[in-house]
Image (tube, rainbow, N blue to C red):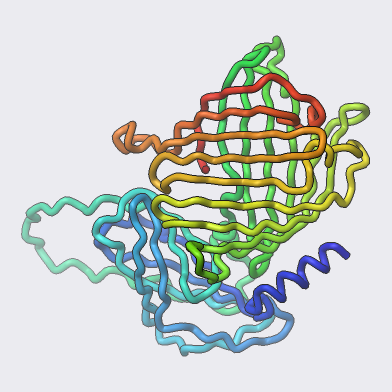
Length: 387
């Protein structure tokens, strides 16, 4: 019943959810250099239970985002003699090739987002322009470059590249080490998979690792699968707001233990994501998560310590210093985690990616096992892969 209500809400919020076709963008497979042409594969999929006529656009507006980069590019359909529309059988797809030009100043990892078509984001690396050198006279004219791969035939059963394109990061990923009573580490892994339209399945694991004890045991871990509808930009602007996103879903969290150490909750939640300022420059993200507890038998008083609203905030620059905060407040307790991060590329001369991280935690329940215990505050230094 809860899931049915969430899906209904998602449909009301986003009319395009009712369309039968969806679009998947696959990043370029070869090297991409600044100032040069690149090609992406775009899959138009019929996910309905009936045949659908799908229009194939001649051009697609897209945006490239990266370190210090936010530029619009036009992707044009690579001529393959195919009609501008295609009738797809249920479960079939049409693979097409589109080409565009990378801005001359682009470098490093960039993200490609379609502007007018709902699709996934594609991430790829852009290399510096190739050095120009005098070449010897060829003995014969070089053969023409191979044309882009022709579209797959309608009805192919499985396309692993398109499946992998549906994966994306979800929450921050990092590995940090500190000392409280014992030397310990905290790490988090998080991914999401776009199942259908804007419906996502995500998995996050957060673990505390005791590095000082003889067997180096894991003190506690939280396993958090979620099913949710998510749109990062609903198109609303005004009052200083540069982007409004929304996430609505259900989630489970447990620590995998049994007996007296068992902890678990099931929740339903709604998270608006409000961005103020320049998303590619200095900006403030405010994301309150309003939640309800569907089940908390193992820890019936957990709402007294976690409350009913989590607040995530981030302030800083996309390619610079960024301060993140995760705050909770209940009638009996509170928790605050601060993460200050800075990209390693400027510090390492572009030899390393990721971010240098300084983490501070204070309050109750850093682990699910200790949801009702307040331990001494904790400072950790770490490496952050995604922030």
